[in-house]
Amino acid sequence: QVQLVESGGGLVQPGGSLRLSCTASGIAIGIYRMGWYRQAPGKQRELVARITSGSTTVYADSVKGRFTISRDNAKNAVSLQMDSLKPEDTAVYSCNAHKTTARGRDDDVWGQGTQVTVSS
Image 1 (spheres, rainbow, N blue to C red):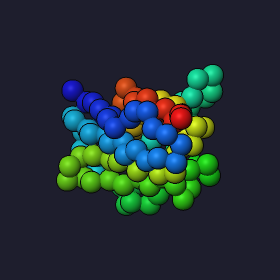
Image 2 (cartoon, helix red, strand yellow):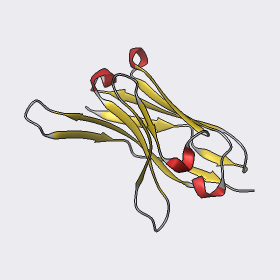
Image 3 (cartoon, one colour):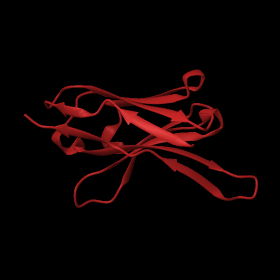
């Protein structure tokens, strides 16, 4: 069974840090582009950060300099280190694995999401 399982969410004060982890089963993430997305109440899901199979990273402007995405293919996992958290970072964070098949079809796997709440 293909599955992505996130962990590490929770409640943190502004200025604090959290580390999210996403562990994959049923797929080998080494060939996937991995990403973290978030969705706040009443808003559309947005990209937070992603990392290619070659470890090239892309960040949303709102998190640049504060968040760091990394991958460990040996552990089949990807992480998101979040520092200097702000209330506007509050959202459900979901892990994504993406690749394009040989026939040009998008192949996406999503985790169930983990809640991050930044509040004093």
